[in-house]
Amino acid sequence: MAETQAAPATVEINDAIFCTHFKEVCTECSFDGREENDSFFGFDPTEREGIECPPATQNKEGVYTCKKHGSASCNQCYGWKKQITRARAQAKKAGRK
Image 1: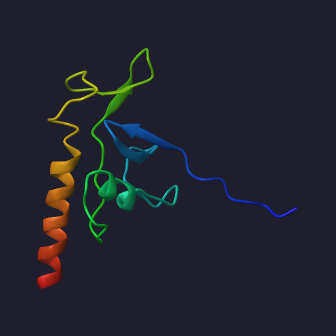
Image 2: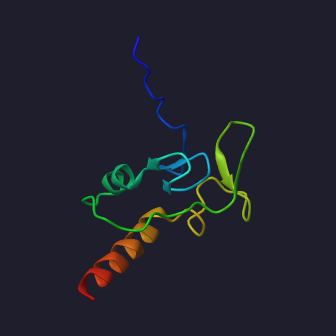
Image 3: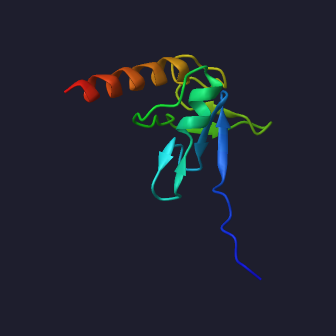
């Protein structure tokens, strides 16, 4: 029987996918969620830095909430589209240098 490598465990936080270390790109678990997150938020995949989730905890329903504000839909901490837009702009600038 051939051994298959299990897919890394992921968490969904306010519609974005991260590894269990709250990283979009993690070398520790060989996870890269940039393409999935880009496409979910309406972007074409591009080579950019991964975003990281601020500290989070799960509430009684199992939904992740930011530790700072205690909200599952906190736009200040979980404004993924804005963070991805910034990361894409930085990648574009770096490519011009």
